[in-house]
Image (cartoon, rainbow, N blue to C red; front, side, top):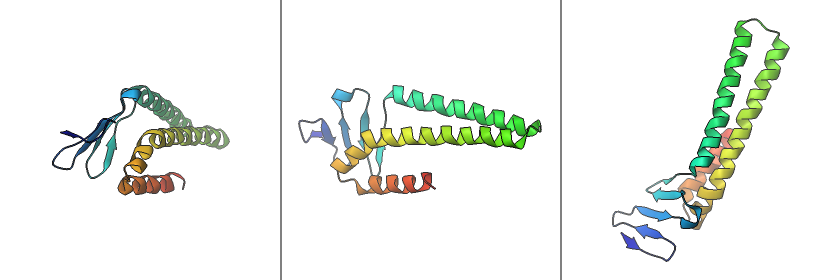
Length: 125
């Protein structure tokens, strides 16, 4: 690997780009054709815990339907699950923008930026 800057950016001869953010600790990227990335394990754990709660809540809604509970109550609980999922999506979006999109813009990685724009469009529907 060749070091191309003081910032910890490295390029291999096959075009793969590596860099790390020592000031951020666990956050590293490996670049191929697409912008791949990892996030802080604490952030991932928080997102996974939110998703687990949403799955449990949705399972409760399924049981309510199976048990013939009042449709109004089912819809209220289903609305709460939708809100939980939307909030988790917003958290994922914030994390991605703080770490990966900032880096993609810095590197002029148009593919990653366009991929994120498409994901935002789908999420917002």
